[in-house]
Length: 85
Image (cartoon, rainbow, N blue to C red):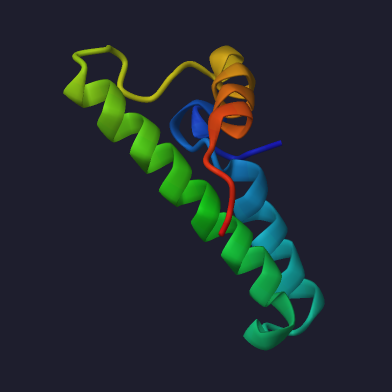
């Protein structure tokens, strides 16, 4: 359980963050062995920062969607994202 009771609400990438820390701890803080976790965490942060920015521009409050809406928002993005070239 997160130490901060609001951690999940305030950090949509909490799971990715915890997996990164767990990997570092498991691998004696060898960052090279955890690169895939860092990339995943950074992708998560970029995605939710874009969502936050878009909601702010559209005047949608709260800027960061509630925890219970995040899976739906992420699924909608994955369905509509442009194909990779």
